[in-house]
Length: 128
Image (cartoon, rainbow, N blue to C red):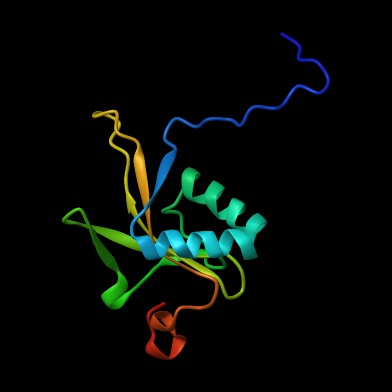
């Protein structure tokens, strides 16, 4: 079936997309700040996190190390990642992988959203 000119293009839906949730009130506030300062970059981050949040990208996305390597979400230790939104802005998030047998989609919990580089991952402390 051919579409008409001016018809919106629907976003492709993948079989194992992730849902994003705020992991804290602070993460929600930070997300709002990022939305006002880096809207397009945050939209790119959203697309990345809903498609493949546990994919290593040395320039943009990687696991945190040391004390930040995991975070407790509802009593479960989940791997924690960092996504570089802009040169300074960062998103930290935990990934709960999908369970196809249980028909449970994957979940991404934002644990920190910051318009500036978090002190906890200062390169002098070797967390990355």
